[in-house]
Image 1 (cartoon, rainbow, N blue to C red):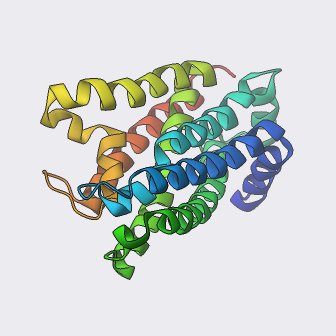
Image 2 (cartoon, helix red, strand yellow):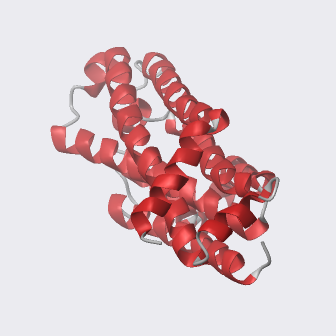
Length: 241
């Protein structure tokens, strides 16, 4: 079967599952709302990074992105869904590639729209604090935000395919993002700069230092996502449906 019909069928699955559409809506709502709150609360702090404050809602929003990626894959492991999918598309690699594409495209679109909305509402609260942001920095933040959210969704999707469980994937990822980055990260030192969330979020800062820049940081996150997807693809190819 050609790739386009397989991709279309996978998109139909996502579009008809309310929980997945709800996760995308939560991604938009949480990111925009928390960015607006951060923009208001940090206007008096001269040391805050205005671009990061405008896009800081990504921290809770990425949880919704990961939920979307994990649930889109784990739904196949309930009620014999994977057996039905593979009966229609015997080439497992093609099916998995279509599933990954059907996850990546809507996440990227929603992520870009969300980043624009978050930047607009946060700038209103930041006022003069955001006046120094150049157009290039804002475009980089918006594009980087959309790519980052997409990569985190794909990281979750790959783990869900490997573990055959969305709950299992999220049980690993969410504590990893919330605990390692915010608790262990400041203690462990430079090694955590290469964690997927810390590396990818460098693109959200106006100014940055350390071994990684905005795009090299996203490349590190992409490498994590690629490794997870490769492991998930291996699991799909070699384990019984």
